[in-house]
Image (cartoon, rainbow, N blue to C red; front, side, top):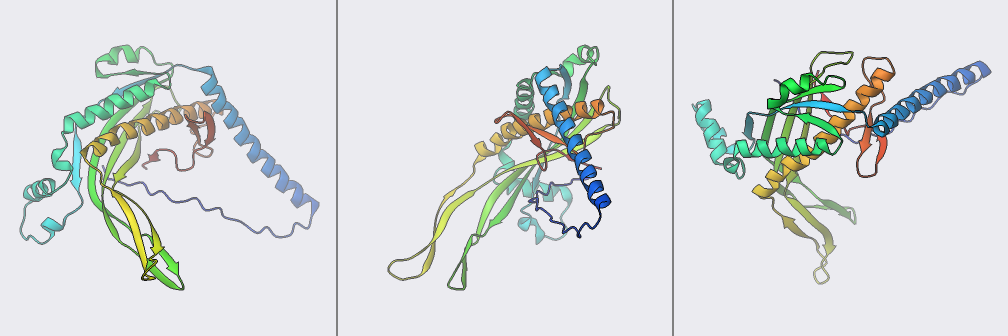
Length: 297
């Protein structure tokens, strides 16, 4: 499977300058189109609220992950070595890592799997495990198969460069921080939806060292200095990624099922145009924007 990383970008509003509407007909058409769009969005939001308030039963067959990919992107140690085979290269990269060499793959995946199972239960979703397949397939009213197909831990260096401009002079500091990604690929099949084809979703969460500081002019020398405190992540923080990822993924799984419900009620194949997100903290429904799985084409 080709790996594709999420790229979160800030959603910048694009303003379009409409030409002067010089006819009543054109103005009328404009308002009609706007009304239809807003009405559609309103109807979908009401369906989302209906799904949440009705407490409709949802069943998920959650297939346990079996393999964890460990990738060290800090390749400097092997870049200068010639005629090295892949096995030796991979071994050197793992042994030179800070965190990967100390991760117990089976424990890491178990923590993620059971945390996800428990998080899904908070949304009143019935979760069936590998040993309960017969029971699951008898309950196909609103049923989905989620296969935690591929999972990867990446270790790398990220750059943090705070800066400030004082009297037309730009001051900056460069920090090289240890960071870890936990990448998840989920294969999803809806048993009784319009589209029976399997979909593949991707999502990634990360943890990194943290710098907290500010630029200050030294009272005695007049020089601009950057004063900061630094937090270094450890192996416990890496394992905690499993719990955070499980929490986010459970929320997005619930969102996906909610949007499938909207699509069925609207009698269409998907609800990708107006995709909604349920905020479990504020207990409200909002436009998902980037808060969703990435669908891999």
